[in-house]
Image (cartoon, rainbow, N blue to C red; front, side, top):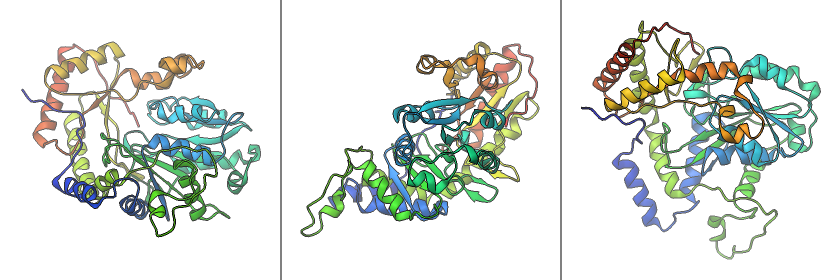
Length: 410
């Protein structure tokens, strides 16, 4: 029987050699390779600068802190996401505002988003599920229409003069929307390089930003450095320069930098990335072809408007509930196929129930969740593997005596 893993990291001898080179260099914390990786990310995304940190979560939280978001402020995000999209709001003391998804969609509802905006709203965190970017033009239109409600509390907020759009792009590194790369569309964009992501540094993340009127990219970069390295005015590399040991601590800040060991993996991964994206696209297209007409709906990754990064293979089975969905996951596991669910909506989780959220107020999110099943998608999969997965998935439906119909998830 085949044993098909869900999402193993694609690491080659090249990544290993680059890490060995770093270990032998004598410089293993944040240093020249992290700086090189940051510039490569910026070049890839079409931005002037990027900051590499130890997670996408850190990228989002440090961005909120740099923006001065805190108690008394509201930040809106989707109910259909992983906890990191919302927990960072809680970390800075702001109020979490969750909105439902569009019907039969994994993306937040634009109508609900517009209704949720108040004069306390400082940031919106759209979530690019599975590598498919949100409709950022429409989100910007909504933000512009609510500009009269916005009250900037500091220089950076006033430079925007409106609600800031901070993309949770943990899944969408390499994706594009209307010809623009993820990273250059939203005001700020946070990527994840966790072990299961398309591009990995084991743990890690990066944040990019668009140019901000009246504020230099270098100033933004410096603020990130202060926030992520204890508020210290010099990093370890700068302190090694002759006679340059002295530094100051300007604020009792945080510690979430990326190391050169992590960046070494990322540098090679990025050099291979277009090849990895092509491999994922080929696998997704095979899944779509094989599951067509079966009553299993596959998320659209490629249209005339957007190009996904192909991070996750999300499917839905119409007319079933979560109990039957979970039975199918167990049947696939018995055939050696690892599958998953993305995601259990936040209002279903204890932490968010304790904050007062109730899944009954998010019917579209629950409707998507109850019959969602995520199939393996990674660059070690063969065409034969995909055929086997699809055959066993279809058999699991037949053996469950399910009556299914095609849905139109987006």
